[in-house]
Structures are given as C-alpha cells and as structure tokens.
Image 1 (tube, rainbow, N blue to C red):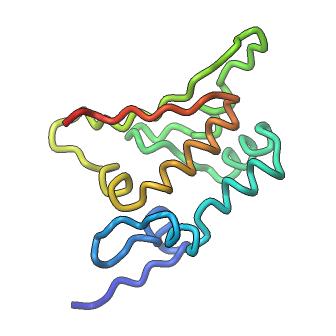
Image 2 (cartoon, one colour; image 1 turned 90 degrees about the vertical axis):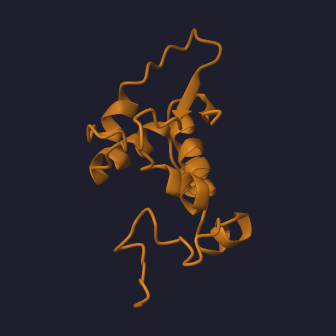
Image 3 (cartoon, rainbow, N blue to C red; image 1 turned 120 degrees about the vertical axis):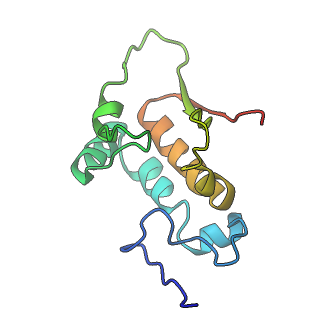
Length: 134
C-alpha cells in the first residue's frame, strides 16, 4: 500500500495525523508547529486583525452550511457591559452515523484546543467544550 504524504499545503487540517492512527499529543503537536498560530494571534494581533485575516482567507465552518467563519466571528457582540462571555465548541455530532469531526478530536486534540483559544480570544470569551456523554 502506498504511503500518503501529507503537507500543510495539500492537507491543511490533517497533515499532522499519524499513519498509525494514534493521537498526536502535545510534544509531537508542538514539534509540528502546533500552537504557533495561537502564539502569533495572541501575542501580535488584535481580535479585529485576526477576524479580518480569517475573512480574507475564506475559512468556512465545519457544520455543513459552509458559512464564513470570519463573518460569524465579526457578528459576535462587543457589549462592554457584559461581565463574561462564553464561546461554546459543540463537539456533539447529532446526526446518526456522523463522525466528520471525530477523527480530528481523537487524533489531533490540540488542533481543536488551539482553534478554541484563537476564536475565544477574538470573541473576548471564555472557551467551553461540550462533549457528548456517549
């Protein structure tokens, strides 16, 4: 069987996956530039600058509707009177037999955490992860 060669250019979400299907834990994730995006975002950019970069990149959500992630983030309320805001990552795939995000959560958990950190920073929110009990 031919080995699959994954690069950031050919497989932007999955290039860090291991061929043995084992999880990519923190040390390995960081050795493959993991958390570099979060480091750059949180130390060098404002939330609005990040939102504009996400819009310009044309990133779309994974929910099936293909909605613009940058547009969604730009619609988050910026109400200064709110003491605390939450950003919820709903990891419960409700459709029977749907496991489109399961691969990423099981094998690249830090990719999800890094994305939550960046999006919560942009929304000036506390990140929460909802996982199903099953």
